[in-house]
Length: 208
Image (tube, rainbow, N blue to C red):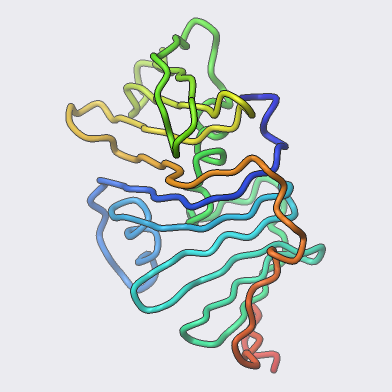
């Protein structure tokens, strides 16, 4: 898995959160991500060259990277928002792309110690053989009891992640590929599909 962090991939992902968070205008997206179902299509060439589309019943929201930051295309509102690259260490709210299995596994396993890890039986994910790994944090104050990760056997890329809290029951957060390819996406797939001339919006307002 560690060797796969820079590997390209593409596919369709569904993530499910079971955390009951209060809904407000400011944190509606976070509540939906951590407390509901999110559908994503992703094309990942590298950590600074990728695109992820969040699918909904009313439209799509596309996030793609560029040398000067991140571009968010809201197809329903016909609006593009440009966000500059956040400085290292800056705290931000979770976003949909954080729920992609490779991204979620990377965060969950980043500080894992060998003694906290064990193997799980293999299974098939998105029609491919995947090998499993379980993390049981040894920190007594951890709010997570275990994290189960299955990685594509051929590429090592995480394709299914399930994080469980201290309370028994369903996973607090799960994310899985339903369709997966370890082939590098073509560069032109990372450009959001333009349906009309959009309004360009920055953090300070409309730029035109």
